[in-house]
Image (cartoon, rainbow, N blue to C red):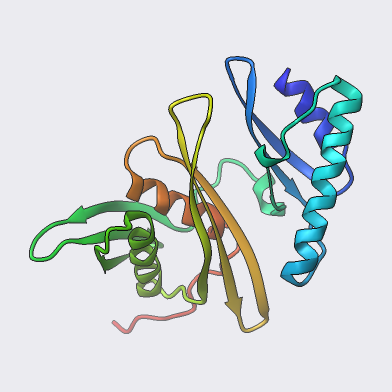
Length: 214
């Protein structure tokens, strides 16, 4: 059933790909990649709502099924996502909470033989603390320009699962882009947050131009 619905959704205008999550015969989430043309946030919201309405109509017509629009998450299509078998530019070394000499979140990242370690004091919000520790680690590797728009923990209503969903603004010399990342919390929360950050940025960022003196 989910495969047929995914094929129908891919026929909707501007949709390039989608993934339907199904648990015990019930659709719990639909992640849609679409070519979004809007340049500002308000226009992008209208564009996403229009795509969602088209998806609801197509599925209702083809499958006689009324989807819950709240389960549809639309993100910007990234052409490089079609490439498979490639190692990400940035990889996770570690993500954990260190309790001495002070309680803080530590994130270790690797890129092109370099290691970046970022820390952020624990504030009681582990997800946000991990995000900022990750941003600090990215800065050590030479990657900057990220601004958090939102970071949410989504609960699957039909299974004992949680998902990290985040949105960041990425500003470079040539303009600004909005990136979204998602990761299932399979192990612990800090690791999932870092995976979500990297899923958002790994295919969009340029490789560091910083050179190290020998």
